[in-house]
Length: 228
Image 1: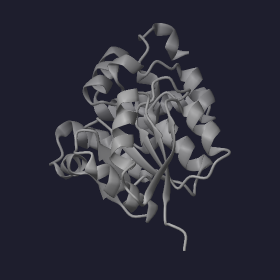
Image 2: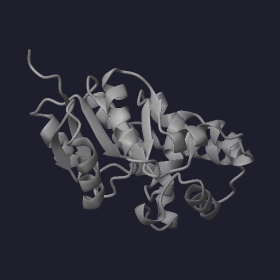
Image 3: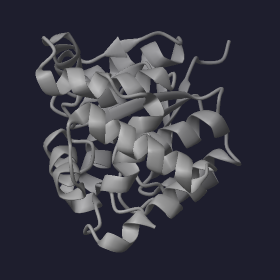
Image 4: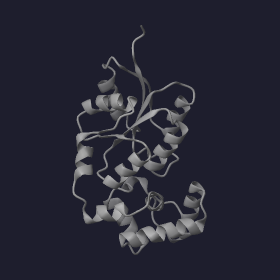
């Protein structure tokens, strides 16, 4: 009888993180790390021609063609529906974690948790179960703050539009990416800003940074021509 192995691909743009993940998973006799990737393009190139059971990927891959992590994970979920995905994150934003779970990614691990949770998450993901590491569980079980309530009031599309806009994309760029009209995207942005009681693009960017909708290093400066 052949040995049971879960084929895992690791994706993170930080070499030290990849080294740490390898150090954690390589001794596990039920896991085989078949590739490590530092960009989304490397990941896609490998997956298009090689078998894999589980992807362990960082939420933020700043050099990717995607404006944010949710867009990247949505793409991976659609392109590889039979491959399990473990999301790694440093974010403490419950709304984003809920959005990941809404995509069907039910295995989320915080980089703040001990590395052993990676092993548990890989096995759980392969078995098509759900697993949130302790830090993620804490975030999800915390009482809703006023900001969290506002974020929860957003539809999935409204949140996506806000994230893309706050990351530096124009209304036209977002419309093209999401295959929607400019009017639709503009309406969704205005609706979301009203729900959040955000009255300007400057306030929107500040809110996005404070709530981890975008990272400071992953955004473009606000400019007036992005409204077009």
